[in-house]
Image (cartoon, rainbow over all chains, first blue to last red; front, top):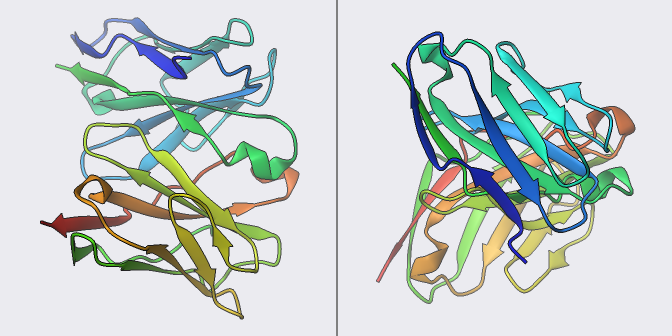
Length: 116
Length: 113
């Protein structure tokens, strides 16, 4: 049981390049999330998917797109990377049931992205 | 505003109890209190949550003030592995706040051997 896995672990991009961060979970969770964490800061929600087939914006969605490929996988795409998107990106998942269970989230190990 | 207030840092000695405070003076009646921690170079890890009464699990205890304007996460015997950033987060049980964890800067806990 791997939990939440993310690929790649590290990535360096040039300004303007695009890339997709991959996330998968094997806990049969319905809901998935993408966060970013800038140095010395707490996490900020980018997008989330309450269930397969739905996605919604979080606090900082600009410059990102997401795809909920199936129940297991939730990807985050940067279409034209900017230095301001240098950050650590975390994917998380949770059980969908009562709203309270949505707050018990399981996080992946993160992807460290540098945009030069 | 879903803000909570925590001290920037705290220190403890190994095998001693640690009390991590959190103020949430504007909490509403349907807001839960959640605690997460983040070990160095890892993703956050769920610790505990509560609404009104004190809660215990294998990781920690959560003591919530009677007026719910503050709470305290209690680690009964700190270990070196407990050195982490601890986040106190309000989460509304209403549907519009579904899963939207709002992380502040948290409390950096240092545990001395």
